[in-house]
Length: 411
Image (cartoon, rainbow, N blue to C red; front, side, top):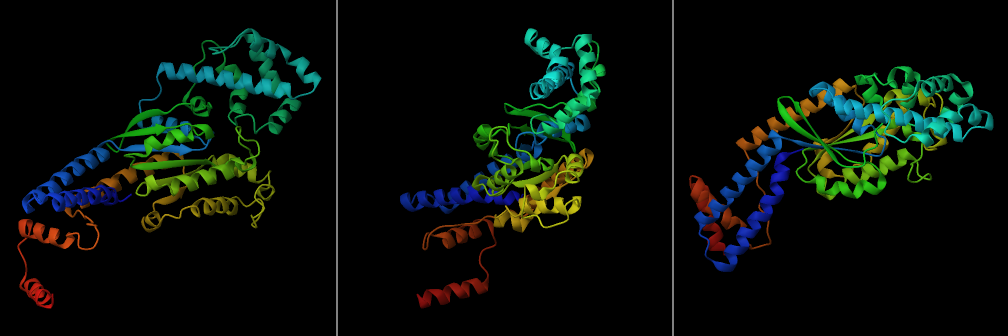
């Protein structure tokens, strides 16, 4: 993002306002005009210094794109880890995730499966969450259930309804569901959390206090994003690249990848975000690589003409689909939109590097700020600049005086 682009727009409006007042009242002297411009620039400088001192980064993406997990990863790297309350809530959510998944599979199975694992359904009817732990008989039954080939087949068939991390907790159910068990960092990262509200998380990155805002990706919550577009230094847009065969929970007729592309199109070309850098992270690459070899992409995207199981070609196909959305001339010139398929640590380093670059840009801007003066013909733009030159400059050169004389005679 070019900081001067953000400064330029309000400066234009301010100078126009100053000129209008001067034209209408005739009371503003050249010195007063100059002082107003200087005062405004000082205010803008302080405003953007604060933006760089404590940058605000917005995390966007569709539901289940991995936004909350991404923030958890940054918290492990830059923060002090998780509090006891956060670990407790993660455990409750993990147990609830397992029970809900088991219920989904049981209800969509034949009568033999329903009868065999009915005690799980009965327990859920008798005991409502949140669940701090599970009784031993339910833990053992869930462990047996996960080893049942028919059940595993059901999980595969219903993967569009069940979070992929459920297999992690089913495999480790005897470790995570006892009363005295404590989730580790891997468990917390795996735990699927549906963001229903807007949350703010603060980290110290590159000796800078950074504010991250995580917002719900559910379709009916996306209108709530707009107020957070103001004073944003950067947007990180996450996409679950493995979701090319899934449909939206809110709209079973809409492919989740298609929805992500449409949403990215809206964000990258939004009029309020012309000068904001947007980083596109194609997330869940590990799941994507496994799925490409099992689920042909052409079933869902007939325009794909590459090799069916070539992970790089399929990845490039989706990368191009997203980048083609960018029609902003400003972002094309600045190459503000880019794709990252990075590890957690590499993503963190990319953010740190970006913050350093922005600080360098601003230091250069402080040395040579650029202002654009706009207005209609004969509005006094040139006269205004001459006034500033008399006050702040060294006057006019002999060549400039000669040109003025020639223009005066011609006029």
